[in-house]
Length: 149
Image (cartoon, helix red, strand yellow):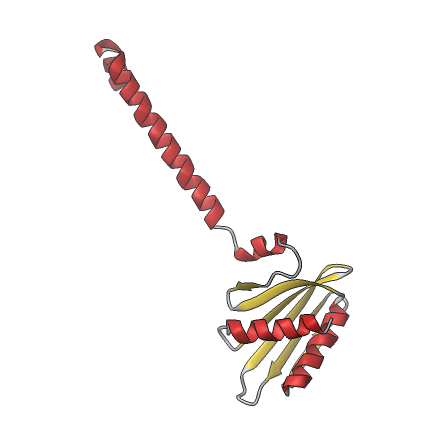
């Protein structure tokens, strides 16, 4: 590299401009790729966490939302919706900071509800229907829970 720069200096300034332009173009492309990697490698959940309450995010099979209400209040709403839909309660455990609920429908499909306190007055709720997640069914259940709050 050093020898080519010295050679360019000897031959004239036009080649130095070409060398500078290649360096600038390479630097711009490098920074663009780096910026793209940084923006695209982030988890959707992190972006959804910064979003306003009321926005449903679908991440890796889970419908997720931050709602106004304590973990206990959201848990009671989820249990009421499950009862309304005729789901059997398999597991219901938790405390004031987190809860984990599992229900099964008549087809023996699993519905998992995870609750996590975000603040004293808001809770993150994650719903997964089935093993790999069914977006429509998970979001439908989540919407019904929110409407009961």
